[in-house]
Length: 240
Ligand code: IMP
Ligand code: MG
Figure: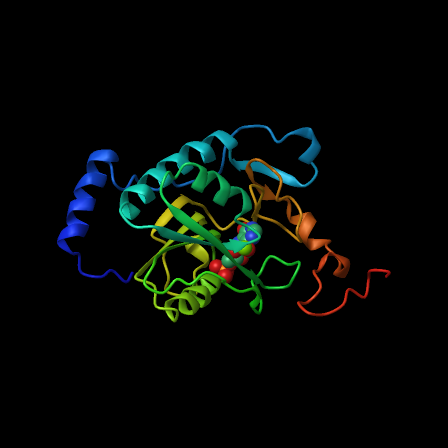
């Protein structure tokens, strides 16, 4: 990813960061294969096949990620740009653990479908902060085909930030279509459709505190009423 040549001041700040945030600078990304043996709470048992990543595993990993990010971004105020809506939980835990000066903004992006495939991307909220000459951290919930991250990266790069790094909670390498990787990754996961900890299916399950594998019967039986209303159009289903 784009990195400018480092100044003498930058080197000093880096050395200071190395003292403040000791090694390892990059911890190995945990690879999840089948998931945990932890039982799905009865309330979710119908819809969730199994728990892939527990609340505790997520919390531990996010602390490590925040540590790495703090080390890399020390010395300059950063702008965190988070993609709505899937990053809600991840973002709040990530920045809660980041004691650095920062500004926060959001980009809304949706592929408008209640399905499990990413379709046509639509921007539902634009960036409001000026990122020109700034250090930007772009946060997303999951890197799947890579289409979303590619589109958003191109959009932010056009605004001429000083540098831009990307951070995702989950990475599904097997599904990649675009040549894009994230700089900070929480977990590598297999090709399962997952929900929870901010990730949804048809806007549901975002509130689960863990990441779970969705039962196939849920997305096979989802109807048109589960689809969101296209941006700028009136909700024909809603009575005024
Ligand atoms: P991509 O553009 O295919 O990389 O997909 C990125 C977006 O698709 C994410 O920000 C999610 O909103 C959504 N997505 C991809 N895989 C999953 C999944 O397994 N569960 C929930 N959402 C997903
Ligand atoms: Mg998303």
